[in-house]
Length: 194
Length: 194
DNA sequence: GCGTAACAACTATCTCCATAGGGAGTTGAC
DNA sequence: GTCAACTCCCTATGGAGATAGTTGTTACGC
Image (cartoon, rainbow over all chains, first blue to last red; front, side, top):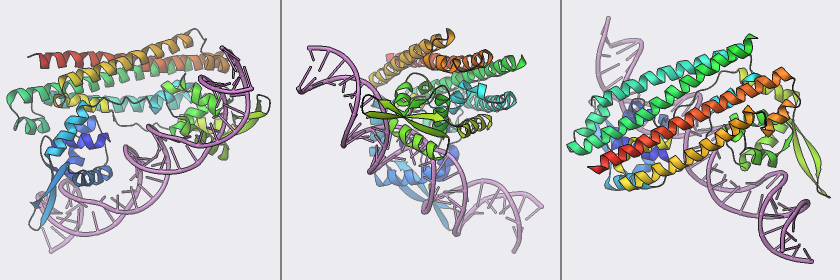
């Protein structure tokens, strides 16, 4: 059900089409909640059906239109209600930790290869997160800009500070992960060496 | 598909019943891969059907029996193959981060309450993880003991070291999470104060 | 004018996972 | 000797999510 609220969160910044969302997703909320377009389009329809969104046909090119989704009052209410609801905490379920715990079953070279791949992924991801945080810090992040434009100064400041806080967490997480992966590589070398 | 390999991982230590697994799950692998019994039983059946496990009826009480699952050669091969396979990296999808990013939409008191709940959860979880790591470090962890009993010295040492490494990662993760939650609490106080 | 990349909006299918039960045997305390 | 708590093994249902398609339009460089 969180996808619904991730979409509401995004659409409170500005009206968007499904395509905008599924692309823009890679730029901001996606760092916090990723979803493929095959989930996004049906969910947008359901949300419209449930009255959380309205859609408007806006012209696209000469002959076409596209569907732009707007959050309704009911949508805002639902989002606020969800934000005030207690959070259901999810239990750990990460294949990377499962594999790490049983690395003695892998070929050392395969283990190293996997750890290197993970390190690469987290390095790239960290760079992306730090780039996004930089844009939030100097208030140049596009979604944030859109949001600030229709919010009073003080409200906008709140939004910016919390977005930055979330990215601080994501960045800390990525760094912890990277340090742990490096430890893993060192451990494989140590245990394979002798 | 990872559940299957989590089960294989556990059963390589010693034969177990479905019930043992679903209980023992809370003690060890569960920290890395949690699953309810409604997933475990059908999966065990499927794994037996696929030849990765065999089951043996062992007496339980005077008149009953229970089903004890053993890993087959094919099961070991499948597990090793999975360990050597490249890891598919999962994208972030954590409602806690989603909420944190939009905390300006919540009532400050509701926000504090949620953060306190999360802090409590992670504190408890951290204590559990540290307890388990301590048992791994002094080689008293029951599943590890069972495994060491049928493994040569050097092999057992490998297994212990990698288990400990996994827990180091989980503990580092929990600590990072806790520090971030404390930052969040401080931020709510700061932004609500004025 | 033509090809290609991007834009737009889906649908279909399959696995995974969570929640919520059911039902029967065993152990141990009182 | 009976009641509760625990052990054991499931099933049913529904929602979430991943993967892999389809169909058409528009913008733009050449």
